[in-house]
Image 1 (cartoon, rainbow, N blue to C red):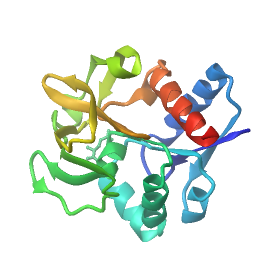
Image 2 (cartoon, rainbow, N blue to C red):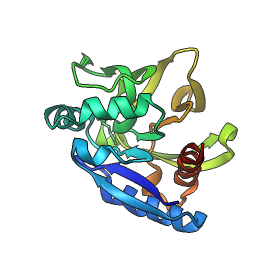
Image 3 (tube, helix red, strand yellow):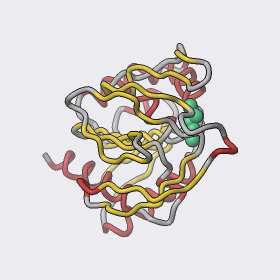
Length: 206
Ligand code: GLN
């Protein structure tokens, strides 16, 4: 049984996620295909999907225009595991505010009952790296790379907080949906990609 793992390939950190996912599959010894997802048709046969970091306004607008938004939402609501990274986590949210301009009317998937503050730690030049911990999923030490990163300002009662940094929520999980404010694909450490692929694998075998 081979896993079809998609990377939403509209804009952003696509190749980095292809590489991390391929490496993580090899390390786990799981047979899988890493698929560039560009159109609604590409979404149909996926077992799991990564929404990469990049620019959430562009990713949202393009997905809306090319008709992928609706099918993405349907597949995720029907249980397809998804890892949303930075802009990808913004895409999963219900409401996004920008730290400077306030409420943004950008297209969002509205999957998770979370509110987000975009660019929460500052703009590009305030990017930084910091150790983060995700104890509840057995990743106690992880090098978090934050680039124009959001933070989660409010979570619904069914959303688990996986990690906080400086008092702000930077990783969350609800069932098969994971979101991180930092970029695991920019580190050598594949542990978060491996955790996600194990989730995809067990959800496929169920
Ligand atoms: N600030 C970006 C946004 O709001 C996200 C940055 C990132 O994905 N690294 O879309």
